Picture 1 (cartoon, rainbow, N blue to C red):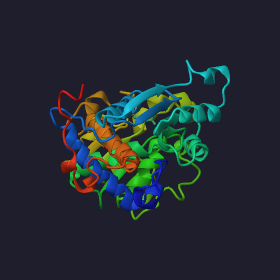
Picture 2 (picture 1 turned 90 degrees about the vertical axis):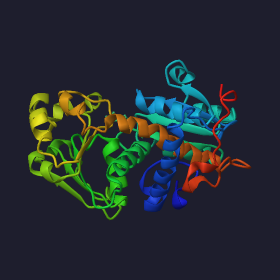
Picture 3 (picture 1 turned 90 degrees about the horizontal axis):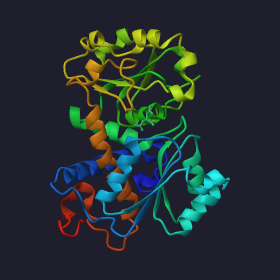
Picture 4 (picture 1 turned 120 degrees about the vertical axis):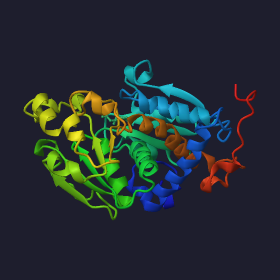
Amino acid sequence: MGDGGRGRHLLGIEELGAEGLRELLDLTDGFAEVNARPLPKVPALRGTTVVLAFFEDSTRTRVSFETAAKRLSADTISFSSSGTSLSKGESLRDTALTIEAMGVDALVVRHGSSGVPWQLARWLGRRIHVVNAGDGWHEHPTQALLDCWTIRRHFGGLEGLHVALVGDISHSRVARSDIAAFSLSGVDVTVVAPRTLLPPTLEGWAPGPGKLSVSGDLDQVIGSVDVVYLLRMQRERQTESLVPSMREYSARFGLSAARADRLRPGAAVLHPGPMNRGVEIDPEVADSDRSLVLQQVEAGVSARMAVLFQLLGADRDAPVGADLVGGLTGVPALDPAGAR
Ligand code: NCD
C-alpha cells in the first residue's frame, strides 16, 4: 500500500512499513467488533464490485475474502481459470483488461506464479485496486496481517515476542510475508527447518527491528518461544523429495504432544491451514487450548475487511465512517431489512 499504508494496492508486506501495518491492525480491531455484532454487516462499500480471481486452489482465503467483501456490502464476482476463456488460451493480460473494462473496483488475485499481482497492478494502472491473495512461493500479505492480529490479540502486543516458524520455509509464501510482518512489528523470529527446506539466503527477509535467526533443532528452541508457527509441507510443490521421509520429518520437526508439553505457559500454536494432521502437527495439539488456528480463520475476515475498506473506502465521495481509523463507531449497522 506504499505511502504509509494507503497506496492503491496491497501486494507485499514490506511496502506497508511498520506504520502502515499497525494502521491495518488497528482497523482490523474495529472490524472484529463489527463481526461480533448480531448483524455483522456494514454499508461501507455498497455499490462497489470486488472480483475474486483464484487461479490456484483455496478454501479459507477465497471464502474469507468473499465474506469480508459481502460484510462491507460490496458485490462479489468469483473467477477461476477453468470455465473461463483462459482455458481457451486467452492471455492473463487480456483477461485482466476485460475484467477491468467491466468497471470493477478491486481484483483479489491468487496465482501459482510469483509476481503475478505486481504484473496485474502494472497493467491495470490506477483504475483498479489489486490485492495479493498469495502468489507462488512469494507473498501472502493478508495471511501475515491476520497472523499478527491474532498474536497481538492473544498477548496484548507484539513487540518483544519470539516466534519459532517451523517447516518448509523455502516454498512458503506465508513464511516470507510473516517474517517481514513480525520483524516490522518488533517480533524476533527463529526459523526451524532442515537445510533442504531453507532458501540459500535469508538476507533481506527481516526488514524491521525484529531479528531473524536459524535453527535445525526444534527441541532446542521450543522451551523459550512465545509462539510456534507451523507451516504446511507443500506437497504439491514437490517438497517430499527434499526430506528423507515424512516420518522422519515429522519426528524431527513436527509438533508432537510431548514437545507441546515443553512450551512455556501461555505459549500459542498457529498454523495457516490447511493442516496435515500427523505430519507437522499432532491432532491432539491442533485441538488443544494452545491452538489459535480457528481464531486465525476468524481474524482473516476482519483483516480482509480492513484491507478492502482501506483501499476502496478512499475512492468514495463520502465514505461511510471515513473517520474510522481509530474505531468503527462511525459505521452504522445495516438496518436488518436493508441487509437482505
Ligand atoms: C496458505 C497458502 O495457500 O499459502 N494457506 C492459506 O492461505 N491459508 C498456506 C498453505 O497452503 O500451506
